[in-house]
Structures are given as C-alpha cells and as structure tokens.
Length: 98
Image (tube, rainbow, N blue to C red; front, side, top):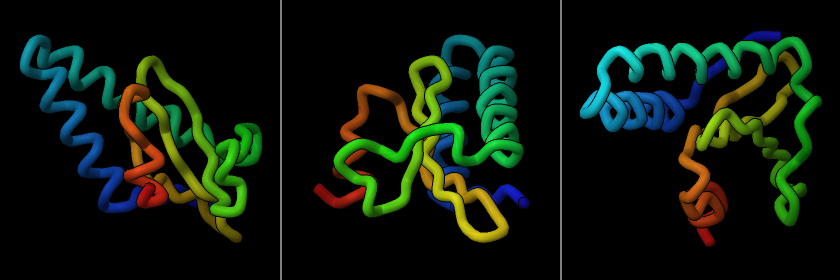
C-alpha cells in the first residue's frame, strides 16, 4: 500500500507550518514532521481508525494528532490524505459542503 497526499492536504500542511512558524519556526518544522509521520503510519493499518460518524457513506476516516484531524480515505492500493484540519474547524463544510 502507498501513501498519497491530495493537493488540499499539502496546502493544509503549508498553512499549519506558516501559522506555527509565526511564533516558533523550529516547532513548525518538527510538528509538520510529526503530522507526516502519523500519516505514514496509516499505511500499516489503514482501517484502525473509524469512519466519520454521520458520514460513513463517504468512506472518510480521521485520525487525531494534537489539535489536528487527519482525514483520509482507504482505496484499493493506497491511503489518500484528503485534508489536515484544526479540530475547531467546521470540517463538515469543507469535506462535505454542508
């Protein structure tokens, strides 16, 4: 199984890094490494995190890391990271257009 980041997820990582770097550039780098590492770990056991309640039909799962939510989908031969969002974000609007 391989790991793929959507362009939206890559943009999310850049925005997270920029925000953290305003106060602590070194922490921004280490935190982005942590987030990427958590994403890489999903390849070994992609179904270990539940589908998002109320949105199961979309096949999107989430993993929590700190205050951030990693949203991903398991496909036949890959794990696709869809978005990485702060937990206070209205992810329903972003992911499902609500």
